[in-house]
Image (cartoon, rainbow, N blue to C red; front, side):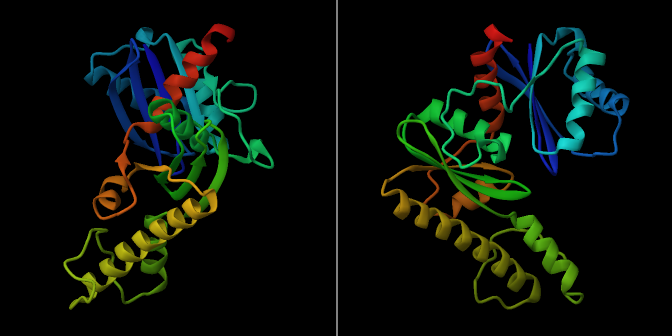
Length: 257
């Protein structure tokens, strides 16, 4: 079995692959304060519910955008899985040219998403990843990573509103019944939801114009489904895009590892 681990700023996602197929996945809170042993206990309990044992793991591949926690997961892999993990970063083959002024600056998750989406669709793409930050990445028809944009995630934006406006309550991020709302809660939901949808479609539209292309717009991440349902530009939602990218990159590197 291959264990794919995507460590994000807010959540860490684990996916278990067998014969190239994703069997189970789990989502944990990313906590820089947890030790190797604490993560091992947590993962052990999740595996036990799925009748999976540490000894079943043949290899591990990790994508991480939280450098302080990477050493913890490397230690976890060595101590409990007895494996040296693949780490997405310099020195690993992705199969995708990176046309960025400094390729090392591109987050591993953005490259992994790009690899997975291009492998599946084989055409020009804009990938929108709704995470702690919302990232927008353009992939050319030749499979080249061309760059993109980064915006505060919708939850980060909403949290700033809740913290700075003391009289406003915390609200669920959903599509409200009307834009011209009649309650404070609905007014906030209208501003957050439609304001963020406008941000997403505005950036995507400008990227399409600048690229002079008609790329397929693919969304992933926590709010991808909600935004896609109400967007005229998002064509596909791929919830497991990052895990799939990790599987593909693993396959491209294991012979040389």
